Amino acid sequence: MAATPQTVTIPARPPWWKRSWKGFLGLFNSRVATVGFVIVAFWVLVAIFAPLLTPYTPTEQDYKAQNSGPSAAHILGTDDLGRDIWTRLIYGARVVLVMTPVNENIWLPIGVAIWGVLLGLLVGSTLGLIGGYVGGATDESVMRVLDAMMAFPVILLYMIIIAAVGASAINVVLAIAIVGTPGIARLVRSLTLDIRTRDYIRAAELRGESRWYIMFVEILPNARGPIIIDAMLRVGYAIFAMGTLGFLGLGLPPPSADWGSMVSAGRRYILSGSPWAAIWPALAIASLVVGLNLLADGLREETLRYQ
Image (cartoon, rainbow, N blue to C red; front, side, top):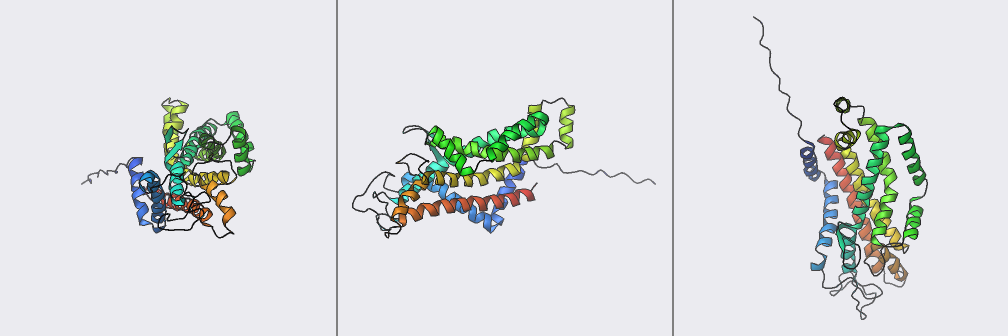
């Protein structure tokens, strides 16, 4: 008697957003990633609720407490103008992560560092997709221009851009985007070169889909993992860049609560026994960048587990 054929049901693969959500929840299985998440969440929350966490404004001066140490009135001390350091730190975090000042009255949602990375991600991903998928002379032209940009030292390129267009929040966003675009484009191009050989890309081509559809609907979503991790790391690089530009006097114009400018102004008083104005913003920059790196490492491990 012939055996009855068995029907094997292959479970459907969950959509990408469910796999990504599982990967995010899996972050808390890693102590390192959890520490990174806590650090980043701390700075995001104090930035959002900054007006509720201090009775001062970032420009308010107390001439009776210049360069004072931590006290009940000023928990982290004051700078050389008597401004509360804690207040300037949390308002500085707001500019970095939560809100971008266009002028005194107009603020954009999302901070300077994140806007810079997002803009660089948009331009770099587009160039990388075009170069990797189209290939040929188009690829050579795009990559050679980007290679020429990468030949410049990063700090020098930042200084050239800001010196050319002037110091402001919007110009810092543009500088971060321009400097980050070549690296993002090279990453996306390398991913595109691999993905374009897959069977589902061939199937899309046989269906007669356009190049733009294939690049942005078929290739880009399947390259999202490394791109997201790289973008998170680049936010940390952008924060370092903002601190460096502020330290050199090329960041946000005064009296903005810019962490780099705070370090630059406070370093003059370190040897005189008042290191607080330099130490606290330096620690803020370091802690936020370390937190982003730890979070990115944990996210990479967990998302790979749920691919």
